[in-house]
Length: 314
Image 1 (cartoon, rainbow, N blue to C red):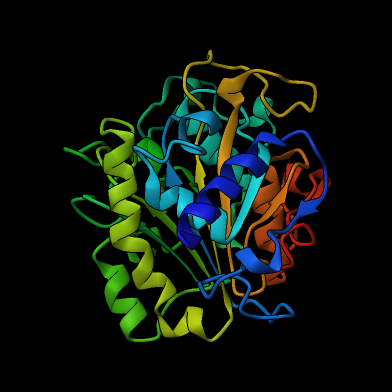
Image 2: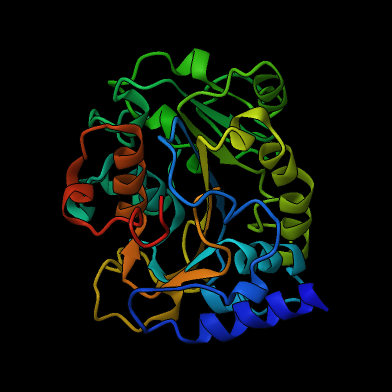
């Protein structure tokens, strides 16, 4: 009954997506789980992003038949109810989120989801090269820092290879299987970028398949020494909503386009269980939040975008 209450609470809170500020679940709904276990934020040493694909907020939140696990995590941790992608299709969202580049500064061909090439890359700085340790963990990637599609691996969902000024891609952009070893060996980097393959990220697979992947993989992170030490924050987001048109400006607080609004779940020991925020956040907010937590300078649009730090007690 308690789990059902949490799921219902998430659906109700999500419906209040236009309200600003933070709403926390009642004490009766705050159960033992990955969130709400710390009364004050620790100094966060690790930030993990998990990126899913091509589903709007309403496709996921409240869809307990296809995404029961994701909804349970959203209900027991933090949920941004007015979080927006920056544009369409995939690649410009991945690049904007990791570089802070405004849409007009991105590679022109990125709006065609191009593979890495001399006409589809950028020399801009990125969060991968700000001085912190980092790794990108890419499911089904055939070799480190692979620069073209292969089977269920899509390079457009792996932004690191697109940065020509970035050093160490061949060492730090690795197949997803490396994550288990890094967690076990207490070798998790400061910043981690995780992309499931095309089936598991919901791009080619179903919502239920993506939910099963999160259910099968997130617990390893939450049970790790790094998370249990109170020094790790995890964000689950979607690159863009379903539908929409290329080169659409979604990073606009007046938009009502559902293809621009995606679910973003905030998981940390200090995030109150059941917390929500209706503040207009975007992928630039995610970048700025991560840079705040890791003590890094804010890149590009992240410097003028609201962060989620205070909203989710990070």
